Length: 466
Image (cartoon, rainbow, N blue to C red; front, side, top):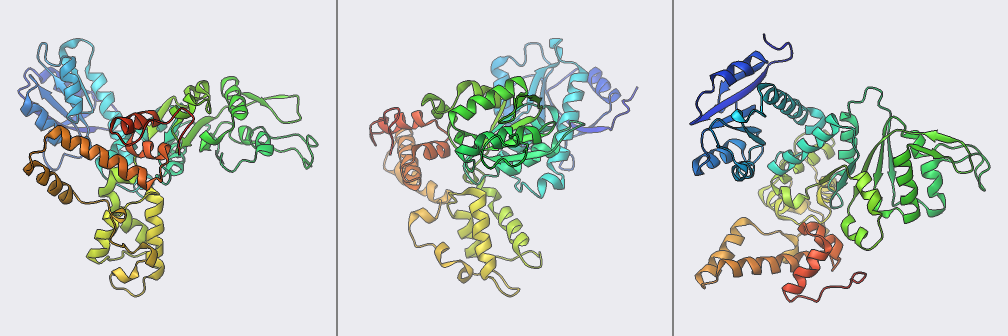
């Protein structure tokens, strides 16, 4: 009997798989429409059936998943086909999931529910809500957004968003709240922890009773009351002082609070979203952030990719911001040198800085012709030094080719590249180890050890630093 729910289309590729007829029949009876893989069906989820894992199978997986951009379930039909070492290799090759049909642990209904969730997430990913607000189509960005969408739609857990400034953490928090499927969902309350004054911090969170302190001329609700049944987003939570961290932890644990100057306990139930651009591991080591609070706010964590990791999205973002900032909302044509400059430029402020650059360009752009190099703001015009560009793949290949000609080994080339990356990032971040570590995907301690190992500088003491 066919499932009454919407039919989901899944492409199937057999790589030596045999005895699949019972599985196909069970999937079809549950509302799965199975089709052969083709260019027209690539956008659907896929079922990759194999009898053995070999180099060819892994290469096909990499091609079919497009580096993880497309969802593929690798299903083993043989006896001891997908052992643990195979499973990890399959995931590393781009499969979203993998398992053995004959294990007795995997059933047709499990696959069906997997495909339905994937389809739900893909529908949201391609919706105007996401596509028109969180622009980008590169693999790492799509894979990240899928995780965010899944956490938003299929859980009510607390979420910690970490990443560099300007990567869009508040936009992501608003998306999570919008996608949250609680039936009685309340409002999204945003609190920027960097703007909270120490003497008023308690009132901002807890609210206060009339007359509780000088200037309290009336009763006021704080963030805990306003966010009840909704979502509380604490931006830059790392800036909260330790005493307030302890009070926040108690509210999260107990679900209740008192207004300042009051004796009555009030209940509150909110979803907590937090964001930070600092290394909380380092802050916990230094005693500046409570470890017990971290585990309460980080049920689910996500490091937002910096623009340097999704450089292929820059042209799309440029077009989006130019159209958004153009007076008539039309597409804007860019001269080739301007396009190349915007693509190669280093954006320390990530997407936010890119938007600011485009804003300055559109301010100076007149007429309906292409944006030319003279339209760039004078402060944005490259001066010929390396800091204005990130370098191209071709330049990197040329450098490696010259080293190989000189007989330099792979290990030495890797070490030279690491030294160069450390030097560049530390220079661009003016020696700020925390920010440099974030950009390099390291903890601050790991960065200190690498600098010491590379002979750049001795490790800083625990509380030291520039």
